[in-house]
Every structure is written in structure tokens, then in C-alpha cells.
Image (cartoon, rainbow, N blue to C red; front, top):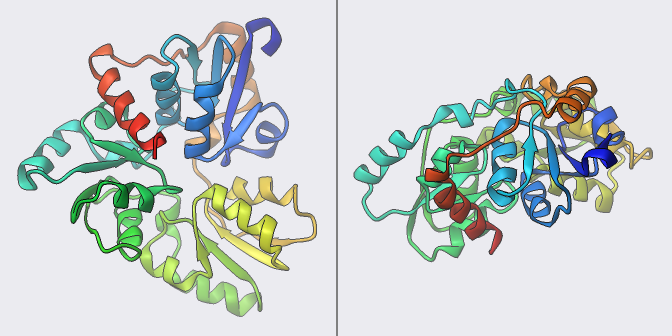
Length: 288
């Protein structure tokens, strides 16, 4: 079916193993998928992820058909801010550049100066060479990056519904129940959780850490499927799994991926009026 449509399937790290290891052609975190989307040699891209990822793929591949298997695959972060909110922030903080997390709509990206991901947020902040930035919409990502840089960061109040559930008490309880466990936290977790962890990083960085450090036992404070997918490559590592499911990512299934390919279901489009500005914000990030 993929050959007939000249299609590729891009899957985020939070997809279930049967998708991630079974049918995906390209896998990775948001930054990796954005980078690889540019290099795709295909007529059709099926994005096994959430809607903002499919929009980003379309921004970078305007001539290709981009499909999302389920239109209901949204994101609490993307829903937490609008272009109108950014306009008000710019009025309140004139001249301060706006850095937007990729977990946002194309319209929000278009109202921004540059995008970032959890894997390159600090780099993006420091690349601008300014004393102060607005970083939206993830409050916890902004606060966690602020601890690592001298740049003043003004945050928004958006949160990831998966990562905001982890607590510092959870980490302490994990250490008590599993002596010697290595705790890796996603930077969308609350700052006190990140402070209690041994290491913090994006899903790609977490995966690299496990591969290089090979801890005897590890816990990944992120979405459940991340541990499942990384564990396949590291049978020698014991994965403790106090994870949280993303209901949006789990809307993607083998059945609706197949339906998307067979029926050209749920083609993603971006309004040309905002596409140029949104693409510019993403490309500025990729150029760093």
C-alpha cells in the first residue's frame, strides 16, 4: 500500500510499538521529525502523531500530500494559546522576541519569531542574543530552560496534560521502591520534578542517554510508549514504568493509518495566508 501510494509514515516516539517498530519509515521526536520531513522523497506523508506535527510536515512540504489518521489527535499545549494571545503579549512586552514551542498551531507559529522544541530550546533562546524572550506556551519548559541560561524568560501558562501529572513525590517514591534507579525527566515536567531527576531531556536525548549510559534500571518520566519503544533496543536495561498515556497520540492506530492511505483520509492543509510566516519560524529554528 505504501509503495502504491509512494508514501512514507513518520511516527513520533509516543506511538505504540506496533506502529513505531512495525510500519513507520521514520521515527523520532518533534525536532527529528521536522528535520526529516524536509528530506522525504515521497508523494504522500502519513503523520502518526498529533495535528501540530502534521501541520509542521505540511509547512515544510507544501507540494506533498500530508495525511493524519485521526483529526481528533490534538494537544493540550497547542490548545492553550492563540494568535490573539501573542498579540496581547507583544503589546505588554514590546520588542521582546517570541519563541514558540512546536507544540502549537500553524497560526500561532505564524505570529511568532522562531520556533523551538524540547531538544533545542536553550540553543534557540541563546541564539537570539537578547536579554529577554517570551517563550510560549509551555510554562514548565520555559521555567526549566530559565534555570540553564542567563536570558530572562517570560512564560505562558500552558501545560502538557501528560507531563504535568508527574510530581517530585513520585520521584522520591520511585527511588524508595527501586533503589539505584536512574530517573530521566522530560523538560515539560514541573521544575521540581526535573530538579529531583538525574537527567532531563527530550525523548531523543532520553533514548541516547539510555543507549550510552546503559543504566541497570531506569524510569522515563514521559509518555508510556516511550519506554516500550526504547526497551526494544535495550533488553539488558530494566525499565520501571510509572508513565502517563497521551490520549491524543493513542488515537492513532494501525487501522486508521491504513484507512488514511487507502482513502486519502484527513488531508492536512495550511491557510496560505499564514503558511509563509509559520514556515519561516520553523526554518529559523532548523537553521540553528
